[in-house]
Image (cartoon, rainbow, N blue to C red; front, top):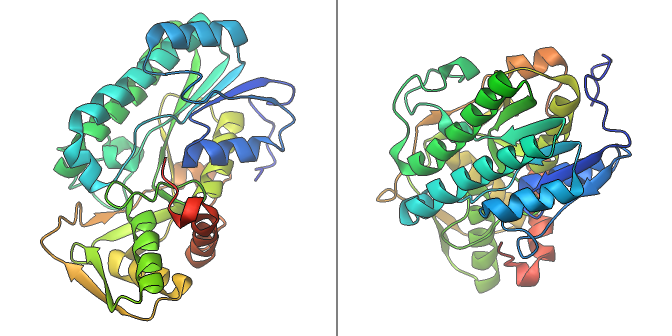
Length: 322
């Protein structure tokens, strides 16, 4: 999507590193970059451990990318955050620190860091504007991940102030789509529902259990819309303030479950396990800063869920895990 304005940072002919290209967000960015006539640089986890400072600095110094999309990180749902708090805060903070410091030393011209909407206070007013960052206590169920992501955004701001580098940050809402993690317990809600309904359909189970009450409202964004937005921000935005990226629409978890059931073709019942945590009751982003620049999401949720389910079926036995 183009806003008709002149690009602030032209990607044509540039060397562009997507850190985390095998993940859902990074893969979407890489797909979008295919139409930008740039040289795409990637590295698998076996090739480059971004939690290793020396390895990260050596890799970037050797390849000297012009631009970096920092989409790498440890991600997961409520259960994963509760089970592995140290992994979430340590790995994500290390990745942000190592890549940004290496980018400075390699003289990267522009870097875009991906935050997360879980960084906003649990009682933030709705929709959540970027100015609400650090305005109150975090949601306890994902605070370890949130603190690491806040640190990454603040690193980008601090480096921008002190070194004059063009580092920007975006804050995406809940993502879904190709490349998602369908782990039985550690996945996000959309991927978890796709797997549960699919397995129930195959086994002929009479019902599917959905964690929580089903009442919380969430906003969901198709991964390819995120990829398009990130490239748009890289090209058309330069500023210290982070930029929210969302769809502008919210839906209850119960309504989402009904949508997924229909997409999968499951005909059994849905039951809600109210002993499981809901997380925050509502979480919608104010994306007016991005829409003013000229970008808006284009993928309806039902269409995006069909694409996600097709990707799930195309995975290893329908149960691909990252």
